[in-house]
Image 1 (tube, one colour):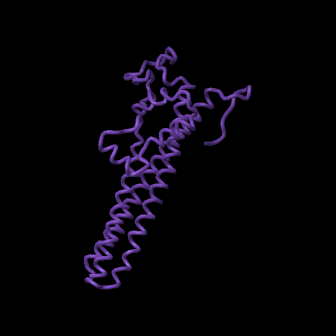
Image 2 (cartoon, helix red, strand yellow):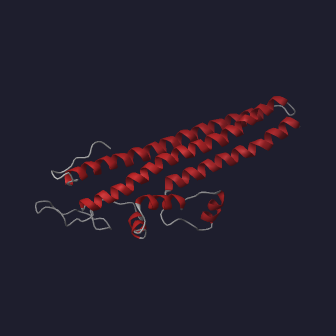
Image 3 (cartoon, rainbow, N blue to C red):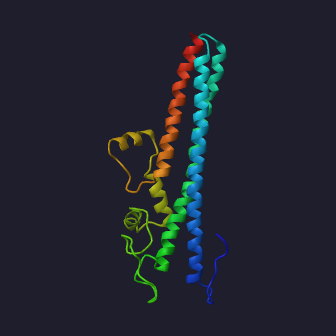
Length: 213
């Protein structure tokens, strides 16, 4: 994040906090951008592998033993799907770290108080529902307020644990369940990779049946 500026007494001053604010805004944007880019990359790669495997399966003759070579594709899909999700999760964790830290910095700078400005500064045209003039992640502030007893690290882990973690959670979500605060990018990445893994598993019996027919 770069070197932190300090006041004359060795403590962080407003100028130093503003530098930190800008740094964490950049960290949020970068981390979320990398999460989306990696998700798009792995979706494209896995789609290409499945399409190529299906094309090869449709062209293969029944009873041709060479069709069993296609079994490497489902294994590759399963592995790459988990690698892809893990990569997205790393960058999303960094995004959440930066966001929670940014909320603290904004509180310390009183950026959530639109009345705390100099007399020559005009009031904002539209204020936030949370009292300031900076747009916030809808529901995140309320969620954090309900977790005031938690440390930043515990709050982050609680948020991530509340997202999809098993295929059973997908069924629960279809039936109306949803976490208090939704991490949409991470949730969609998990669901997408499970879909690719399911498609890869479906190819296994199709390949075996074709090779044995």
